Length: 623
Image 1 (cartoon, rainbow, N blue to C red):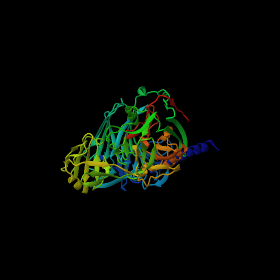
Image 2 (cartoon, one colour):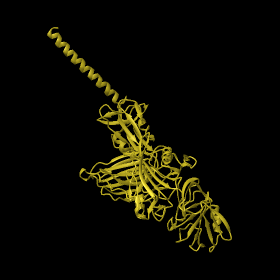
Image 3 (cartoon, rainbow, N blue to C red):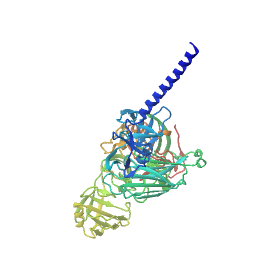
């Protein structure tokens, strides 16, 4: 080929290569942008407007939200990909993977398709609202303001159940437990992280007003309260010099705020703790066991104790003198001078147990109708059954009335409730209630029918009636002798301690999971989670058990069926589940042994504690 002709071919090839590259670039650019021209618009999410440039609409009426709008306006996490990988948008356990220019997406690894394409503008990702709605419930309406359109977006509301913090090596984690997944906005002002949540439908004020001072050099204070605009605001005051990490998880739904430490403040791993001081010989045994599940290994901590031994004592404990407080199991162990223990039964957000609780022969809360209870008799014997409250009050010379509840509000009309000092010193005033104050002498010393506050006398109690029961109490004169008779079905004579939980998981040595008959919700019985349980062996020994996943799988734990199988392998004849998840706590020798799923020990209402009385000891460690 002549030199000129060869040069022309080279130039032609170069031109063709450039043309092909330009065509590819043009094609990609066309895919990366909406089909029609886009324009800025005003978007308000749960009452808070996005900044200009954080949202666009195209002339087909599709709304696109920016990465920053998704993060700060809805509380979603947006992960920028490595080269060739998709973008990831996450929120409350749901994960969306998308690519700019593509209508195809995956939701929790399942393929789906949208009617519009995400796109990049100045390296900022914009996502169609339709895609975002696949992982978060969002309603919207569009209002016209002259030529401009205003998009009003709203998400489901949620109350904050609890707030707590826990220290990690490189950070301090603040955890907000929510009633349900909900979109939230967050931003930073000086050294304060601010989070706003919409209130649930029908609720006109914040669930609670909270002020927490933490014993942590990085987090000073957490404040929670209403904003006056149908939202709850949380302010976290801290001293971190690093940007916070804010994200959400599920099981149950939580907002997580990680406040990072400066590199020079990161603590080295603590030295290995000394061995656990074992329990008295023959009275008890502490061991650690490993079990396998289809999700990976699970570590199980076991206290195997003899309740008939004079060397130890086993009994439930409240977190404080009244039912309205909570504390970590470690604090309950050390505060009571116990050797160890596990967390107890379920509880309300404000502290009261959600199942039966008796300590030293005194019922503090009645059994939840038909749920499983562990009973400890005066002679050290153990019983377990689904228990019902069958109690009455005798009014001398007047007759008897059914007693429905202990230290709780009136759930229904025509109910009679008994309040003791475990409730507190006062019963709040309420119209429509009739109250009788019974002194330590056993007679009525005051009657209150006008809805005023009454004081619970030391050694006495208050009876509160509503509906027909209120009318009955109005007929009781001062000086009348009043005698409560507390009983259960089945009857347990000589009962000293009792703690409610559920569901039953083992009966007569066989799996027997009664979650549905006992009325438990799916968030208790479905799926794998850290678990706490108690079991009775054929020999009458008591096993206190905590199970959790290993390392980064601690949140997985076991299903109730797996827990039942594990308890049978450990040798129990009967067993029941206790509160689990982030509540699962195992303390031995005054030390926290397990790694709570929240990253820090949760404050709980009650616990089952083990006390020692001798120094002769023995133990084993069987990994």
